Image (tube, rainbow, N blue to C red; front, side):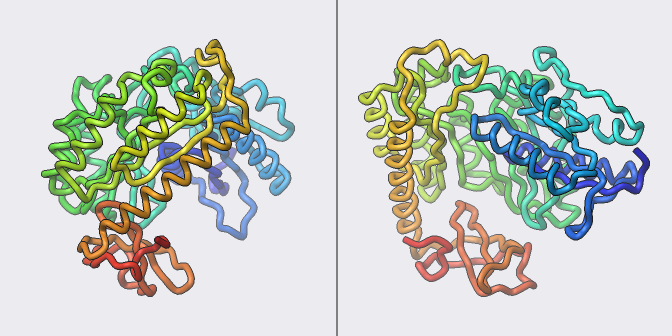
Length: 423
């Protein structure tokens, strides 16, 4: 395929996927390709897929068919986690020209330039390279990939099979990437990965060392840790964030279940006592910190009384928001051997209960911040004449749109009038 062709990415799933798509797009431009304008028919369409749930798989298939109908003559590439685990079925979909596995997406530019037609899906059981990625799609926030893969093999999760073993970039290279973001005017960096707290497996470094090094990068106003396992969220990391210059008092911690029995079924590496300790320590050190929590409902083996334990445990915690997912069976995972399958209607009911609890938690957190003053990084999006932005502790606020404020930081006092959320 000759250069000067146009391309378009369609990215599904996590922020890590978006960071990787952005980086591959940048490499394509270095090979002479050009990102298609919104009015153009792209010569190459790349669908970067997700496979975290059955509904994610379904969305990937729908996107493939939609793009093929929309652009019947384009060269269609399917890559990412769903492509890694379901390559054979994807190749059977009419109009798919190339399939590349989750880690093989990074050879796409070379394949397009050299007109290589073969599909490539590497064996993720072997140690694979770490490919650097940093999204630059947003003028204000950038997503920096610091780690990839996972060695945990939780019983419900297929991601280790799709992404491979835990590996990471070096601190010196990640600092250089952060410095480049600062040089280009970026103000905020979100650290992304599959299991960020496991950072250092391939370089002999530690997550805490990485945070200390990034905290010294001049020009970046804020760093956020996208998600970190509770057993890897060391007390020392919490202490560091509380006293750091640039790391935001904002944590996203996957709980998945508030029942110790369900956590054992999931093969999670902590119990509810440890999780509660982490949450209370954060609030002790940073009372204004925002804490988001992932929860899975309807896991095999989650009997009614175990869900009720989980609900009451979560209700007791001073967390700010819940991200609720319904358990989805993934082929090849150990959870399929667990008896007691939760009916879909019960999953839905449990999900609704937790979502209602999440709304209560978020309202209570926002209400507690009324009258407090914070710094807001204003974003470019314009809606109904307003612009929005986030404080360091992740409160979304709004004000009348002023273009000169985009990608700037200014103080604000929280009131019900400025909240971009009804309470």
